[in-house]
Length: 299
Ligand SMILES: Cc1cc2nc3c(=O)[nH]c(=O)nc-3n(C[C@H](O)[C@H](O)[C@H](O)COP(=O)(O)O)c2cc1C
Ligand code: SF4
Ligand code: SF4
Image (cartoon, rainbow, N blue to C red; front, side, top):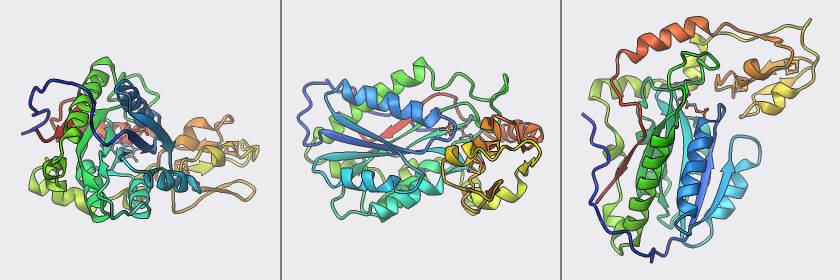
């Protein structure tokens, strides 16, 4: 079913490519995508590529990425967790704002909570192609399921692990080799090349998104007797979905990451994730995706 890791066993050699800089821009409410981003960074730096890493999601976070992408010879790595089988809207907004006519090679990467990586790479790939980027490769990495953490039996606990990071480094080797060749453009991928769900699952996944799913998520309630109005939750929200009035009020930007619930020092945000954990385990049974990092690249 899966067609990953198919690549020639080339010799490594010196990197002669005109691509000497990488721009990694990720959103990572739970930290797994950040870990994947840093593993990518380490692998790129070890190959003498200059790397800039940006966390995106909050106000003005796109501007620095857009500026970095204006430089010559950059490779763009947009990263997102898989939420409801897709990438987060933030990443598509970033790609759309960074629209280019320079055919910048890009590498979408995602972390997924060991249920399904869904159509997230396809979703990101489509946005990238529509906005003038080429898809040089793509990467998916398992991570702890952020709706189940911090529970001991959370799916994906321990990922990305050493083996995942080794696969990431192997991918970077092959990516840089690909970009060395003059005709790398002809070897770039299409969004369909990074779509591996059966047609009916893809159709179902295309209908959903994180905002629509919010109605079926556990509801968050603020306890006014526990809340000290300290504002920490608003500061930590990755997409600025909390307004203080004087207690936290959640707006429509909320992506249901539950960081506010998990990190409130007073436990003043009340919410019950337990029924969701059961639903997630049931949903996992519908998929048989290997729980290890995997990449797509053309030979
Ligand atoms: C609202 C929500 C929806 C999610 N949807 C999926 C999903 O469709 N498939 C999956 O395998 N994991 C899903 N996850 C889990 C995340 O993809 C996974 O935990 C990811 O590693 C989180 O990355 P982060 O730690 O960088 O935030 C979801 C998590 C949340 C909070
Ligand atoms: S972090 Fe907790 S205590 Fe502080 S404002 Fe938010 S809900 Fe209230
Ligand atoms: S309001 Fe809470 S759950 Fe919603 S995005 Fe912000 S931190 Fe995440």
